[in-house]
Amino acid sequence: MVYKRALLKLSGEALMGDQPYGIDPAIVHSISQDVAKVVENGTELAIVVGGGNIFRGLKGSAAGMDRATADYVGMLATVMNAITLQDGLERAGVPTRVQSAIEMQQVAEPYIRRRAIRHLEKGRVVVFGGGCGNPFFTTDTTAALRAAEINANVVFKATKVDGVYDRDPKRFKDAVRYETLTYQQVLNDELAVMDSTAIALCKDNNIPIVVFDLFEPGNIGKAVAGVPIGSRISN
Image (tube, rainbow, N blue to C red; front, side):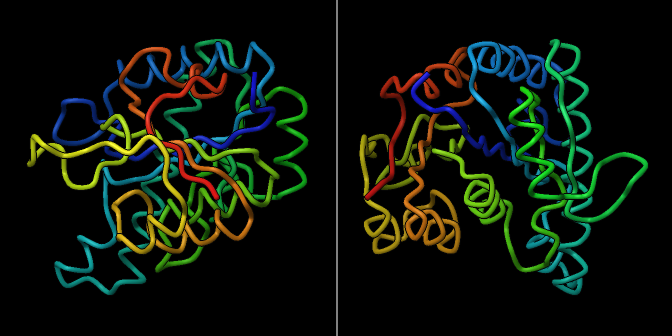
């Protein structure tokens, strides 16, 4: 494995599969099988999961909710996804711990940096739920923050597309995929990869970002092994 310790960012929408809402058990199973192989090969893996398949704070705010309140509801949605992912991983034989930035001791550990690192050292997958515990920050920013905190070598952004394009490939057939990018290029061109705070955090801490297609079986393992898939963002 090229990367000893990695952080995988999963969007909530990815867990929906082809459904309009909620969680597709087949997607959870597929992700769990890929993660099991990665962990078996010795990589320490942490996961940050979003909540857009259940509730998205920005949409709630646009509909008239107080922004902070809407973001807290979105954080709770990420914990639901984290627990579901934990169940799928443990069914695949992967010891898993959920840590939440919002304390809810009956279902998850509180986020404690040193405890998270110790879990990783023991071969457990740590799923971070509850965002970063504060409104106005996305789970992309949480991924960059947690990656820096646990000294991850890379952030994997697993999405519905196979990399970063100069424009929306679903709308424009001539959209061009980038194989490599710099952090500054992403910021300057306002490319829709992760929000600017997340990109800046990774830039400041020199953590590369690899964006790839989650739905291609085995892609998580390929990314961890350093196979050039998707798009890579670095200095």
